[in-house]
Length: 187
Ligand code: IMP
View 1 (spheres, rainbow, N blue to C red):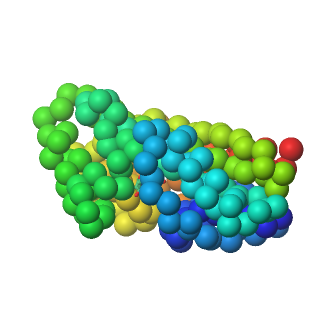
View 2 (spheres, rainbow, N blue to C red):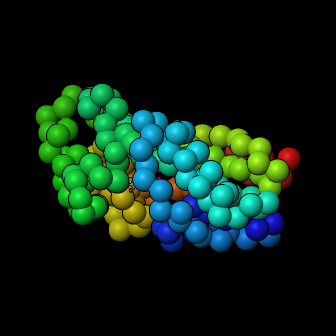
């Protein structure tokens, strides 16, 4: 089954390919829409619908995800990619997060991922996955992307960036959302 995926992020495509059933052909096609939604769900739907308009009669999938911290009232949230402003910089985002959490008693956080799907007949579905954890005092690990070097999932004492892709996919927000998306795609 061919699915057009609204992203240009090669990391995401490979994470998705590892989780969705074999035989799923993921074709990246970023529609370039502005993510103006106030929630992950709104942004995922904006991107999936824009991709569906480019490929009528095909499956399209879009995800929107980010990190929510308790001490910052849910920030960076939908602004995770641009937390430290433009141009987007993972290093500055991570440095800003550590600075804003300095001295915080509560370092609990969660990654959230919403996936919107548009079926060939136009039917829309939204699924989501959440991964609870906490923000480490400093970065460690070289795998993954984004906030991975700072995020320690519950039940582990290493960051996502130290776990490697298979262990991350088994517990991550995107893994959970993709397994739910798999049930929509292959009922
Ligand atoms: P997007 O809008 O779904 O591309 O994600 C927004 C931002 O959230 C990314 O640029 C990352 O900063 C962050 N993010 C989302 N998922 C992950 C993840 O699995 N690891 C680390 N950072 C993530």
